[in-house]
Image (cartoon, rainbow, N blue to C red):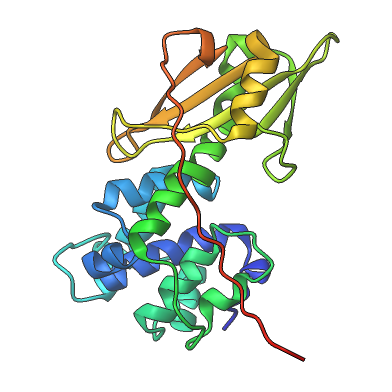
Length: 254
């Protein structure tokens, strides 16, 4: 059994997500912080580069093998390779399996701590689901749709999420000229609040018409997007909010 997500083929991650959702059903949803299967299908589908319907299909394929109320694909057995995955992972407990599924959405170098049985306190399910929707799932949604946007036609895309430059994607027109910067936000519902970090706000102000805010809405049902060019000067209204922070350290005399 492979628990290192870096060694699990990308295609198998979708299958394992479906297996998890089939085996643990609504308890599995709650463990990950999702309110419905549709929300989980959308979040994991885009995160893993799959169609949300594919995650549902994998779940349905395993349903006849578990005692839940869904009949699933009861008229035919799962494919042989998916049965091999079932045999390999079917006995995982919910804590370990949920940690494995969470790890598919995290590229952190300490990713394996999520799948160790006694790794200490884990991220709460509600926090995980929100972070997935507002972050990686929304970013992957943008990557899958940007070529269909007239504003970025014939642009070369660069993912800058880890560069700390105040936006998630840099899009360079192949014809030359200045690049466009895109900051991506995601929302569970059709409306909600979004925030800009000081760096994002600074870049939005500096780049003006070359800065775009791409908001993916309604992961709870069916995601769709809205695009805001120069959001600080457009229809959106931002207000400054200051949040005090507490820094903790441990001291010792030597």
